[in-house]
Length: 211
View 1 (cartoon, rainbow, N blue to C red):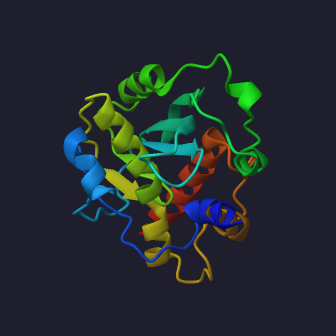
View 2 (cartoon, helix red, strand yellow; view 1 turned 60 degrees about the vertical axis):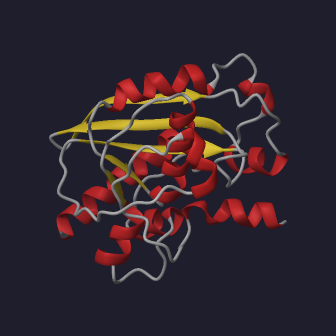
View 3 (cartoon, rainbow, N blue to C red; view 1 turned 90 degrees about the horizontal axis):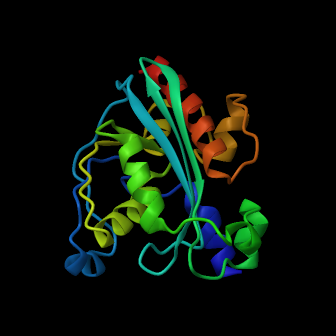
């Protein structure tokens, strides 16, 4: 039950500062720091960016695995490209994760491993700013896996969770499920990475108009 509740917190109201730029964490020091440190708050002014979301086998980036990456590339306010890939974790996906994401062990058999998928994703994002909802969670997995593969990432990062708290004062909660319902944002297949990324993009545009 504790693991199930932890997973639900992924997109929920956390009290940390989740809005940041980030720097690569070296493999030999990453385990010590656990979660990378972020030091700069950005405002929602970017019109060219990539919105992304990850699905994982749990909450811990050093022991759990990425099982899906989904993203949309936005140039001048319009979606110009998409990225969606299941990832073979090389590990068992717990039943409670499959119940939430509808991603099963059978679906992941034969899919590519993160060693193949992540370089393609890095090529996809280029040097564009990255946007995610509760970016601390998603970026911790992205940076940890990039460090293991000696991939350098220097993209700036925008967190719609932080921005929602700042600009959506009328909202009682700021998790993605609540916000999509509050703002009438279409969200098909919740907890699938590509569809969560689409919904996060719509949320970002709403926040941009307020900003």
